[in-house]
Image 1 (cartoon, rainbow, N blue to C red):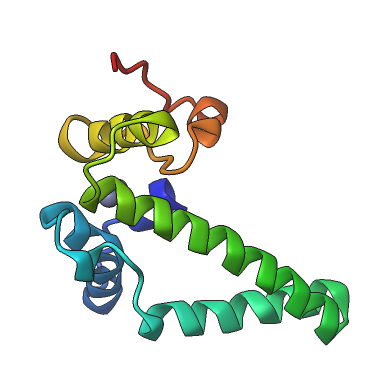
Image 2: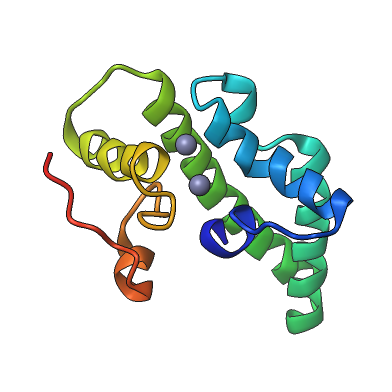
Length: 133
Ligand SMILES: [Zn+2]
Ligand SMILES: [Zn+2]
């Protein structure tokens, strides 16, 4: 999603504004806390779409809601790690490696190292780059 949607440059002016607000503004101002976390004006409609998709697949509002809670928990972890990468000075443990990959994406090569919490999908999609920590 980071690679295909957040770095997408659509020709449609409104779509371009949405992508800009969701992610590219974070690239131009990476230490601004207001641009690190997703805003409810975007997360709530996206959550409604995801809930609808889960409901279409499961046919159960209970199952769809449970799956959405799982997505939210994973996304909260992602947001917490992303926030810490930019605004914390801690440089030990997993944060050291996550920051190395994420700052490589921010400040060296925006076409690689899209993973924030893990390099797993970069390894799968060939966008992983070895970083010297
Ligand atoms: Zn990015
Ligand atoms: Zn970032």
